[in-house]
Length: 476
Image (tube, rainbow, N blue to C red; front, side):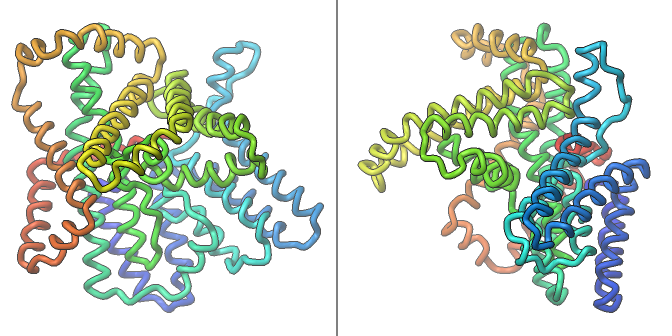
């Protein structure tokens, strides 16, 4: 039951209406049942993995509310180890066994969304371990935290206390709530079925045979993939947030116009997959630092976070490969370089702030960050380091002749549509990036607003690819 399917577009309003009609005491059972039915639509056997994680997290989570320190240590570390052990078995054992013939194969793959609800379960245990007395959630609320259907497949990765606190008295379902939720869902669908799914076939064709694709095609496909993965993943988040808002539960924004970042740190910490970045910060990076002010430890911690993220991606997706680790390591090196240049960057920002030089510097920094990320996406999409290096070497060799290659390349109507979709997306996001300008647009007369949303609906009808293409991050 994909978000971009007719099944989901029927399922969501039915559950939302039922949620509002039943007594308050029955609302939690209704949305728990709906969440389990939603996940079971991807295969009833998937409930086994979800059930195993839920039993571990809920049992250990309840034990963590006990006062005995030794008992709580055992519950936290034992529960976390059990979840990570299950993650290894489902995501990594068979690839490792394939490289080490002495190990037997299990023959079982992780179900859709497994990593996301496994990380959610670890967040629950970590937060309970740190602040056991602050818990207001019941066992049913803990379970909903793990299985809530808008976020179970690809996040955002939430925190237990803010999530549970929203379940008490959901806001009245008034026209403004319906409009804000509907707008998020519509915009997410546009990103997914209009932009991402129209870019995907072109990217797939080109990256399927990197040795035979012409350099110009590799360049275009690389740019196209940057926008495909952004619209695919941020589109999922928008639909998830809009769906959850109907039930009075606000989820993380998770994406904030990522390609307008002017530093790599800003890109990863405040614009791209924000909830995962916060998860790594709170549960990996800060514990690793352990209040140390060592510069070496800080640099090692930053690289550790990226490498773990690369290994997390490597289990599934476009295939198990070192390309994901290379992608992560490359971004870690970017962060290292940026940290080393931070004093110079601060000095430049201080001297040029509010001047035309500052604006030019910000634009150039944004372009540089985008292209650094673009290079790293090649390793992510190719999956294998060899294929990624082949693509980058062929593009690099052709760069001196690129102006001539652009003039000779046989552009088609397909390319024109893809360019127009990317340009339209970036125009809208550029307007959103300016709060003052976006505020004036939002203050426009209501007929103009409706005209805009009718245009969105028309784009979904005329340009949407409704074949039910899965979201990329469901695989991880």
